[in-house]
Image 1 (cartoon, rainbow, N blue to C red):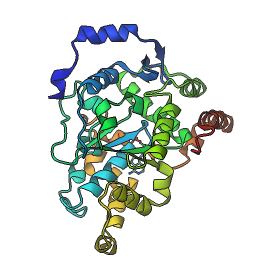
Image 2 (tube, rainbow, N blue to C red):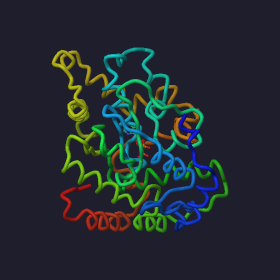
Image 3 (cartoon, helix red, strand yellow):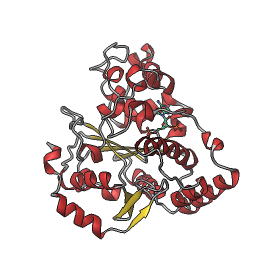
Length: 323
Ligand code: A3P
């Protein structure tokens, strides 16, 4: 299994000892590995994944920055690709009984010390990661496997991350000392957040999607919100499993979109539960908060938001990408 290939602890400790460290945007210790920031647990799974994963041409890999709508994307891609096997109206549809993260595991956790995750069997295999392109194993780059990348407006991503991490850290240490929002945003802007610098990852996949549109489909959370039907078709076309006109007439796309909507998905018993395990230490219900565009207004001042915008504008300058 994946767990049998974890490196000997001493080797990993040696690597850790050689890396620069900093407290991240929530005051948790992070290590800088090949230009990106990781906590210890994720870094261990990442290095094991890099050394051991062999991609297949039929693999579908979902890549996101944390809190940009991964759970939503997982539910959409699962429903779209498995729709012949599982009708979305089926009472026993896997998404009714399992949180999307249990159906499409993250590599970093699959290859970490997690007993409840398993490598998907059958084809295509649906897998996910928050890693930047430069840290993906060679076989993903050289095989014909397909990548779907989803990003989100950095203001909302930051705010979503703040709430999510705060909840988790307080759960494990009620006396955890958080930086002020200003300081936290400062570190986010310096790139010191989980898998950060966030703009580097976005730019890598943006450029690749322009160079090799058959390899990377680049999506935005806001576009999914804007026209989910068009984006479901976009995903299906990209994955060579386009909806037929019969399916369109029967309303299959609408049914999938409705099923995967925040309102529906977050109200399923499995997603309301505080069951853990699909992502280590995180309860299923933690993946659902508000699911809205613009909630940054409730946490950031206009000047903080403008500061973030300026950074993003500067980093994306010349790329043709607007966030
Ligand atoms: P908010 O914290 O702004 O509400 P991720 O899945 O990458 O961890 O991202 C989580 C964010 O996506 C949260 O944002 C969460 O509420 C939102 N989300 C989860 N499921 C969603 C869905 N089906 N539709 C839209 N947003 C969703």
